[in-house]
Length: 125
Image (cartoon, rainbow, N blue to C red):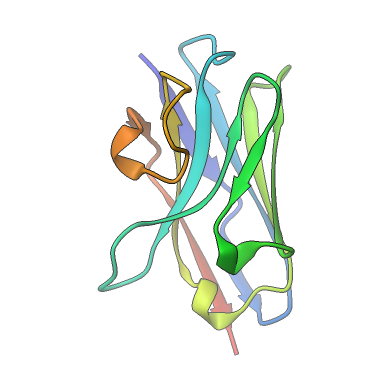
């Protein structure tokens, strides 16, 4: 069974940085797409970034381009989200997710089979 565990969330001032981690276990992820999503109170869960585990191609939502970077460490089976220049509107619970087919549109949350429990990111103004 696939398990995804996020860490690294917290409280930061606007303009600051955080790095989220998603430790994955239970399978070989070479064919997977791994993604980051977020959900703010009263809003739908939205796509943030994704990476194809094989090849490392990355995808980003327009609102994070140039500020966030997604990466992975194959040896550690861990995905990261480096978040710089954080804004109060980035406040949300951040989730990592895994798409076992590895072929779907990375920004489509309905294609992801597995989800972590989420980590809170709060950006103060």
